[in-house]
Length: 105
Image (tube, rainbow, N blue to C red; front, side):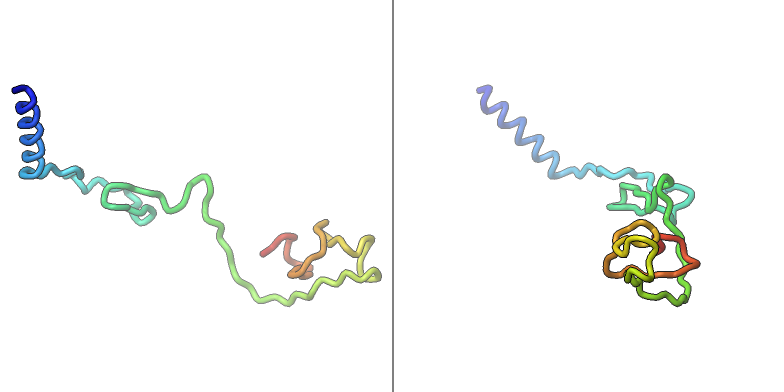
């Protein structure tokens, strides 16, 4: 008898869940941060920041400049022809320019 009672209770719980929908989302969806253009709302219930205040986006500008290929011939270098003026080893893609700081990309 107890077995049928347990089965009946489980059946009623399942039937209640099917007949009555219980919303899981918050009904008050107008709670948004003031700077809503700087967040992404995912699936209507998660707010994610686009950028972190600890790691702000780097601002960059594009300029036209004349750069020359780095020449590592012994008569055009100070000491070691395999080391650039910045101290980095010579490799493909390194250019020389007098007005940009070392490491500019």
